[in-house]
Length: 291
Picture (cartoon, rainbow, N blue to C red):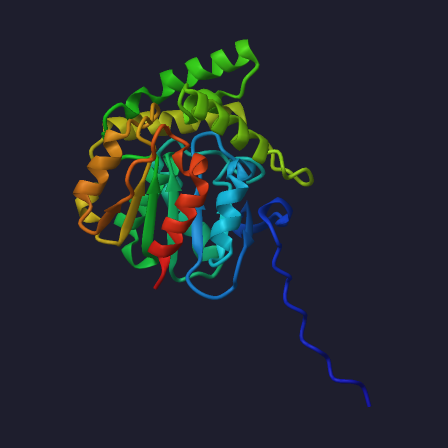
């Protein structure tokens, strides 16, 4: 008499983002890569990334801190990093891809954390698929047509050129203030991004980078969706000196969204405020995400 078959052992939860395995899921014939860690129960938190970012651009202190109590899922959108397909040149198309990805994972509901361009995507998802979303965190982002968003392309290209000439990562100039503490925070953040040494993601391609810049420029010129249509609980955060998406957009979002909670703007911080103040942000985010 043969022994009864045992059920497969559950996949072990990685201890840190730096060793989380990269998986893939097929979305209408295109493979989207993703990583996940944290508890398997509860509403998962889907992270929506910023311009030019791939899986390895999330601060491991933010991911690990959130994953201590939440199931956290990061992914590369279509055509970005190791995901297949061609990158869309509208925020709306990126949002539609994100919805398909969430559903391909078998999820009926999710929380969203959108950073910068990811915050634009989160707003579209919440407006168009309200039942899919429970709560939203919007960081370093702004509404459609927000002040200065149509200038992101020029600002990014100047920072990229400056980075090439000075042999610095452009994120040092774009994400952090040009003060002693800002420069120190930027260097620490960039070092943390190097902690993962195995199975790193592919860098974004030039064609995908151009498509994202085009999408952001369009977002800066349009007027929909109107944040007042988004009735989900929302947490809105930023540094007080954001150059990429000027900080006044954060205040505007918080004022226009009916159920928004504004985190006091982080002192001497810019676009990467949630990375510079990662401990404070993680604590604030986890408290907000409680059922």
